Length: 131
Length: 242
Picture 1 (cartoon, each protein chain N blue to C red):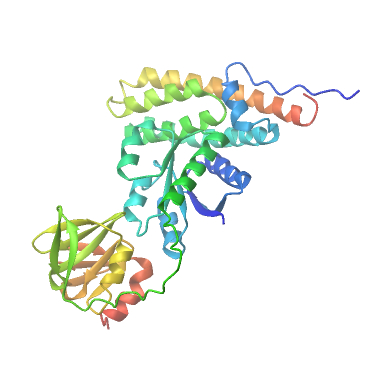
Picture 2: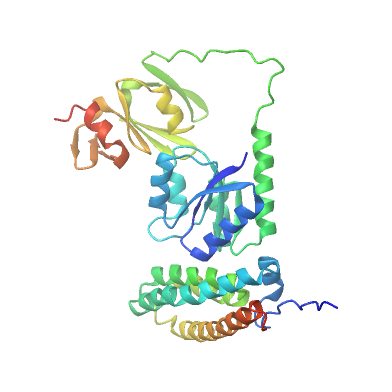
């Protein structure tokens, strides 16, 4: 009798319902997107850091905006919300006032990146039939 | 027939999703993907497409800047992760607004909605097609434009230049400016002749009013008009630049 392979289940911290709708069961494509995310995020995040260090709040806001979009494609819809709030603050606050929010955002980003690394490896194994 | 489109998007993952959705639907053909507004406009100068998938926040210029520079009116679907642009989207008469990231289902809804809008706009063919000759080109020295709730008579000699504002055209005279609902392309056809010259995708100038030219800028009664890359050769010929 042929065994039915269970569907891939995303990490609890991701918006699994949204990811299911976004990828429609295409775990190969999900693997590609997660891989691209891991390649692209450090590049975009460098811009965030450079903008914060130079106190260029306009560029800081637009750079966080880009990262926000990226987080959405891997199911971090709650982190998108945090990015949006930070982005909004960039237009009204100064760099010093943003310091705490910035540190919190870095912490969340580090955690998110780590989760996606794990999810990417799980997806890879799943697609190789080992997961 | 498939709808032709381009994707103007600086985030590769987002553009890849869109391309994948277009291919999957078999309704939309992607003619190109551009990471910024300047490259997209350069392409649109050479080739027209039916639809633009347009991000708003991009490095350099925004999606709205692109809309301001368009010389024809393709369908527009804005793709952005910011809901704050909804009001601007409404003002620019965009056809739909997709909040990133969006699913294939939402993408299809937008395409179907667009198709319905297009069908509504297409005139029902008459039972018997009559061959109607186009009207002869106007040789009057004036024209009427709809502006300020009336038909305003403008002497062609008084017009300094015309500026494209997407679905609108601004007529600038030395005394006043008028904005009318039309496209620069449409006006270009109406103003065909020795006096007017398109010098940029967004500008037609009255060559008799030009004061001087410095580099790629035309100076005309205190106004500065850029000369587009693709128009430089024609400007050189028409203005007898030695």
